[in-house]
Image (cartoon, rainbow, N blue to C red; front, top):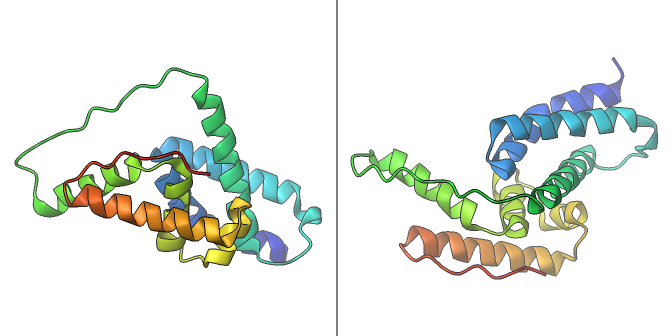
Length: 162
C-alpha cells in the first residue's frame, strides 16, 4: 500500500467522528466518509502535498454542503425530543448538548466541531471552509455563545451567517 493510502486510512476515525457530529446520523455520516475516501483515492494524483487532514476535511465539508443543499429542496421533518424527567444527569446533559448543537446553523456547527472536536487551528478551518479567518472566529464566538445560552436555559434565536 502506498504512503498516501496509508495516510488516508489513518484519518478514517477522525473523519467518521467529524462526519457523525456534523450529520447527526451515523448512516449519513458513514456515507459521507465513504464518498470522501472514494474522491480522495481517485484524486491521489491531484494531491500536490500539504496538509492531508485539511484536504480530507474540505472534501467531507463540501460533500455535506451538497447534501444539505439537496435536502433544502425537500420537506423538513422536525425531530421530537424525549423529555424524560427521570433521565440521569449525564444522560440529560448529553441530550442538552446534542440539542444545543442541533440548534446551531450549519456554518457555526461545523466551525465549532472542527475547532473543539477535531482540534484544528482557525487557519486550517478557514482554509477548509474557504472563508477568511475572521469569519471563522466570529462563527466560533457565536456558536459558543448560543451553546452556552442554550445550556443556561435560554433558547436564543439564531441568525443567518454570512
